[in-house]
Image 1 (cartoon, rainbow, N blue to C red):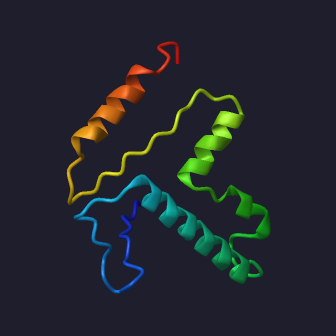
Image 2: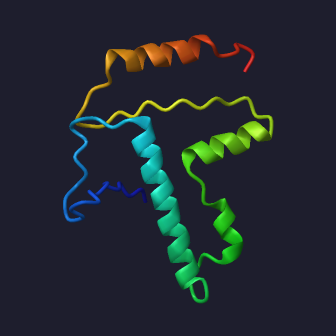
Image 3: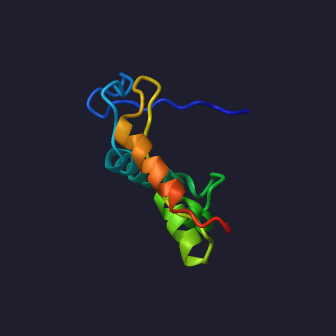
Length: 109
């Protein structure tokens, strides 16, 4: 079963995050860092009787951390993030960034 999660506003937690104005990469990564912190705090809080023990906390990673780990293991992956929301279409420069990254990819990978 797949659950769709909705971001909530930190200012007004009962409201959904307003993504109609778009969101940038730094903000998404900041939210992921915060989510990771929350997960680790919950894991520490419930580790005695919970399903996530201290030995599993190092497996909690943000997208950026996962890609950096793969790169250190010599996997041929590259990380570029272009946040797009349901409410806001990508901008022209987003497509330019995507085309640039694809055009620089090694064809042997």
